[in-house]
Image 1 (cartoon, rainbow, N blue to C red):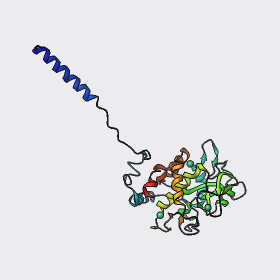
Image 2 (image 1 turned 30 degrees about the vertical axis):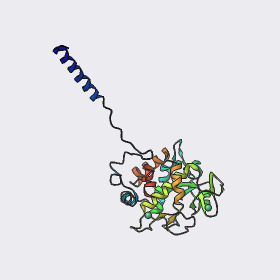
Image 3 (image 1 turned 180 degrees about the vertical axis):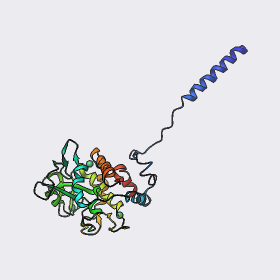
Image 4 (image 1 turned 90 degrees about the horizontal axis):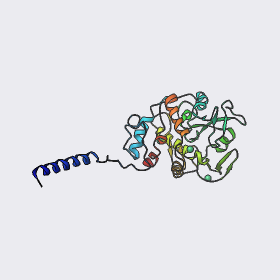
Length: 267
Ligand SMILES: [Ca+2]
Ligand SMILES: [Ca+2]
Ligand SMILES: [Ca+2]
């Protein structure tokens, strides 16, 4: 091979190497299937990212405790916005039944909807002054009769069908919401547990595995709520509701709607 040809081969080989370097594939970070990322990770949740267990719970408590509180009377109108039927702006969607009902039918009579406390008021006796009793993150419109049937029962699987709430079941000591509401209920209960830690005027609310909590500040059953969180992931309706409460009413978010995997990271 002549000197000139050798030089040309060397130049060609160098050019091919340069092209191959340019073709190096970008590194793709492996992400666990259950992990989610949100627009709030680098801002709202900045101090919680990367944590787990009591450290995560403590960070989230600090973050979500910065909030505005509304009156129990203001809850009526707020629910008309947070739970508006996406297909009919005159109506709200009721928890446990999925019924779409006129916003105007708010009240205490047969056929009305009222303000359901998913974390039962009696579990900690927090009443309806501004605080846990008016916290929109666990308040939902529900049919008056269905709300009465649910009462202050803990949540668990099993029982007989609930009249007026197809797919929901109840027995003497527990209530099982229809499948589409199971995850919502779990994430509302666990929000309350992180938000209320006994460092203010209110009891330290915590989940446990009992179905006979009565008036103690606990709510069951944690093992079932964890299953429900997996079984019924956040829907567009639930995510919008979180955004409206954050943007319009309270200025705080339910972390378990943004990051359902944080349920397992804490409990
Ligand atoms: Ca039961
Ligand atoms: Ca759901
Ligand atoms: Ca707590």
